[in-house]
Image 1 (cartoon, rainbow, N blue to C red):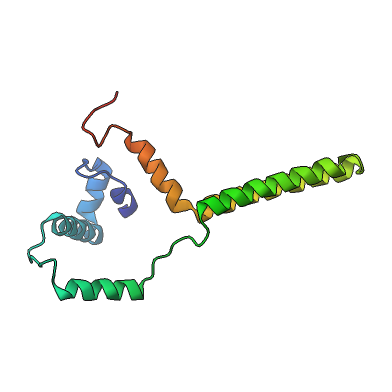
Image 2 (cartoon, rainbow, N blue to C red; image 1 turned 135 degrees about the horizontal axis):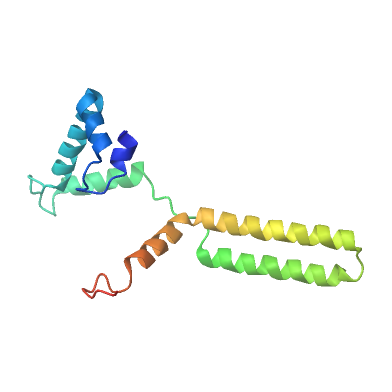
Length: 153
């Protein structure tokens, strides 16, 4: 029931069955109350103003930087794209060169291997650069004019 509650949009009405469950289940009711309280606290303004030149901010940032190093992708997108194109070109050249000297069974095996390699490479590329693709999807979802104040229908 908590999964269904967490899937609801903010300020969406509770379904009747969920309301009945919350009335009957003390544990879920407590969790919902605590979640609502946490949301109010998180949405409220900070009560303690801290000057930007304070040394504690610098100390915290240094500690975060040393404790949790940035997990950047060690392979850049350019290297992924160049190596993928090179892989496809070399596999195509190999296929053209060996086309006349090979039997049909060997060619089928080669092209199946070619398909598996390209598919695996694409899957690795997307998996290793997931944050890039998620950001791009979010950009397309929000639309190009949403931030400028224009509404496009």
